[in-house]
Length: 366
Image 1 (tube, one colour):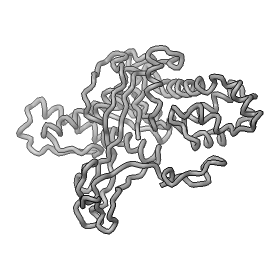
Image 2 (image 1 turned 90 degrees about the vertical axis):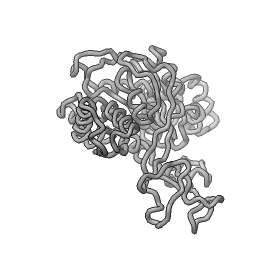
Image 3 (image 1 turned 135 degrees about the vertical axis):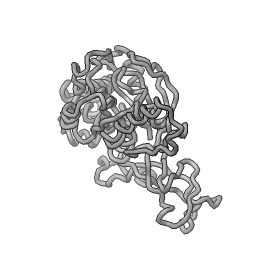
Image 4 (image 1 turned 30 degrees about the horizontal axis):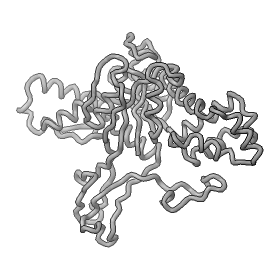
């Protein structure tokens, strides 16, 4: 599973990526700091079965902390997107190509409205973050549409004459983007375009492409720099964007993880609080900084970074945690290790959702 961290330049994408992975990447307050995509590993939390089983697990790929398994997922931080990226503007071609295999997207926006569509600094509140969400959705949809339209007239005519399944035609063109037959089938059922693909006009092609985008590249919006936005602004954005919207404090999360790694605090990512085991170790500046961090996460009930990852994995992608073992009675692998591994896998879709003529194999539905 791969989750792409996307957005326009200078909104905190790389800070979000670092806070989720503790990877070292360049962070600066100017557009296009990120040139090449950064890859890293974050994790989502899952309840370890060893607690209910009354045994002790022996983690190998996913650590267990007090009964919570930390299951690794791949994160991708790509170059910032600007308007007309689908036409190659800015680093658009590279950005979109990097997203080919992303299963879901976390769109990081500047909730304070202090960056314009190009990623340039402007007075706080002078730019509407809703514009950022709409333009990014359109750019990705137009990217898909551009791929779909290459040689479409000839392919559509041939498919119509031969009675070829239009779902198969679209899937063949978009399979390199990680688009599956299920995504195509769901989009066509929703749009219900004319049966003859030769009659599809620009509007139909865009609607099909945009709907495929929503199914193949589902998105959660991270309202970053939430501490710099007032409550009324955040409420307006959440009401407009819907439930897949999370206020985030990427800088706070990064600072908390670094403090925890240094042993100054005890903090489990996703928690709404932390403890200071030995306040006497802190100097005056550190005490002031930690008090500010505490104030921030108490205001929002956490930093939102971990919530974004888990919402993307569990809700957007409908993934579940599996613990493969060889001996089901002892819950061990062939070397006798108890519950050594934990993996995220897709929940099996209902068979009636599969496209006509497409028979799923056991590997696809198990």
